Amino acid sequence: MSERPTASSTDLRPRAGAEGHPAPPDGLKPGVPTVVPGSDDHWLTRPRTIRRLWWVFSAILALTVIAQWFIPIKGKFPLESTFAFAAWYGFACCVAMVLIARVLGWWLKRPESYYAEDDPVREPRDV
Image (tube, rainbow, N blue to C red; front, side, top):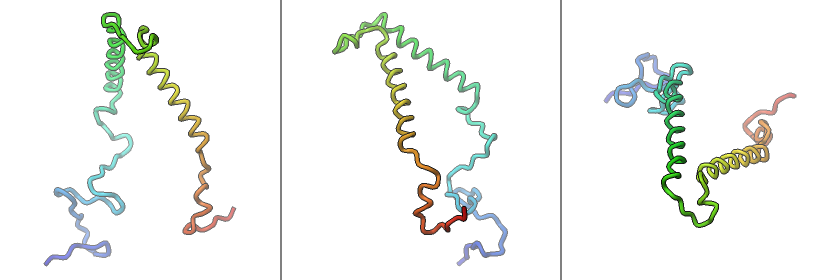
């Protein structure tokens, strides 16, 4: 029966993790990728891809608004039948959600030391 090396072992061989990859450093979960700032080259983080996605999504949104000239919209209320109702209604709702989130953030915000005063483990600081 072979023994697995422990943290106090003098064996300096890297521990094997899943699928033969080296085990992560202590404190990290296996399978969670580590990201080094500035080295991420994922296709969604490239500026060229982001620019292209903005153009593609803008074109799709413009085409859906233009399509309303050719496809009549019959809503339950007269306001829903107006030109580009979904576009301006969606934009207005998005702006409202951002404003509500900012108000909630201001209202629910707590100081950084909010939980430190009741923490029995943390030693009191000399101020």
